[in-house]
Image 1 (spheres, rainbow, N blue to C red):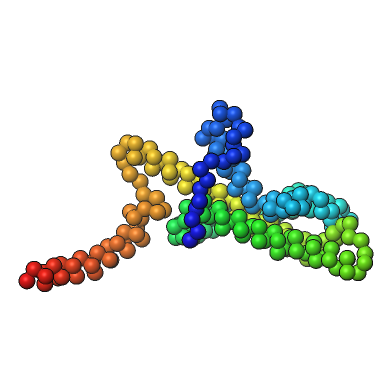
Image 2 (cartoon, rainbow, N blue to C red):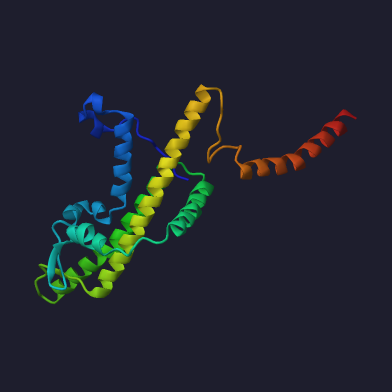
Length: 226
């Protein structure tokens, strides 16, 4: 596992008035950050986040950024059943709990995942079309999007949006647990979290180890005594 390497300070916050550096604003910025890292085009800084890439689909012209942030969300499928979404979230939550990673580690994984999707499925087709036009000696002012790639982008956008919501919920739950832990310790009450040895699976693991280890140690001590 890579170290978290939490920065000691955030230079971007130096210009923020002191009265704005509140817990409520920190929470707002965190929510914005999680949503932002799930916007694939926001990783395309060298291309001005897609603003400078012109494209066309079925006779309508867009910038690449506008297509992803305005056109695609308007064509999302209806939301699935609430119970289905809850079951899916619980499954994802369990998988994150079992990694025993803190949110900062998960941020890194999530960011790499979205950036890789942008490079492979969004930027690559555009660059391949530009390279083909250059090889043929033709101009490439506009990227022409076909329906198959449009459908692929729509599926990716929907999936990433769902993941963003689930991951935001997970991080907010983690923040809430830490707040409860802080209050509990202040009042002399402890609460377990996903990294605590008081969790059921950790308790069973420790109990099993004790059952095997303690009798062995007692026998060794007795043998040594004799």
